[in-house]
Length: 469
Image (cartoon, one colour):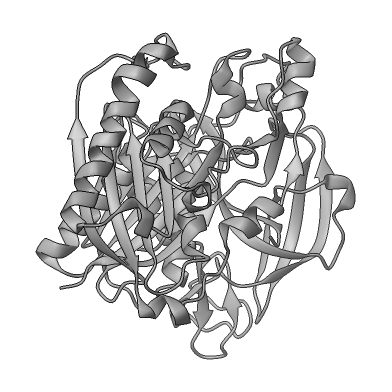
């Protein structure tokens, strides 16, 4: 059975933080380029949902049996975060789901485990990977990091077949973060560079090439990822890898995105790959994983809804002070309104398909779509003759809007909109990723899964609209 990547999706947040803007405020040397920043209403789950929905759109009719969510920044320490991803992606009840966390390497690890699950049990597996990297101000990691998500459907009849894989694991102390700590600690970088990351990454790459009896010169693209990028550079020089074989590490446009990084670069490489290309992906962290893929003939007819390059080009800047406020590093005066209440469990369970899947209803008597889902048709008055009607992927336009500068929000003013969906259905909600002063009636929008607020340790997820990207 041939197992590999059947489809993929990616997500780079709309906001960018220029490294020069950080340096100007703190009076420190500036790195080149910019980093992607998750908005105030995003986290690793919401970004994983964005990528997963794109991956599933590119593989219609896929039967997902396994869902793996990989991250180093899970919103919940004790609760299955993958269940949130599965609910928003409208996956069936009968799936096996798990969270993988603890190391930036888990993104590639999850991809390998999904391939094992498909090889053993058949069907398809969805791998959703995302990280929201947070580092202390003035540190190198603050400028170097980035936020993003990526997802893969792993199954048979792939666009990229898995040819070989190898893993090595070794205990050493380089980067660590204890439960409850916001920022990671790092050991003196020369130690990990010379004695850990470089040798371990090299060992995994050597093993996977030996398995496939493949020389480095035959590789079309190579993705090398390590917490210290110099380890990847030294490995490339030692193996005499030509510079044109190395994939763009997205350091200047997105930043190092932790668990999502190697898979995200892989997604960017797949967009330009041709049948027959060999692609090597390796990621280091308490060891290393390496994966060798061969692009199949099916890739020639494969189309991707949104590429990594398109998402990188779709962007808007955020000021450093606002970024610090979004991450609650810089305390500010709260709005003079009551804090939001903790969401209640019973209504969240009863309205799961609406709240997490944005599924409304359509009257089978007169055909009128409506949301939230109704029992009695708002048009013909027929009772209990409704069928589920998904709205999350339908295009919509702004019917009217207003700005609220007093509402509880980390990013005032709140843009409250009424949107009309193509084919029928009207929704009152919030708009995000926009410049409030530029919102116009008639603007085209699309739906996005976001965290509305958190209260009492509970994250309240729902849907907002945003300008089409």
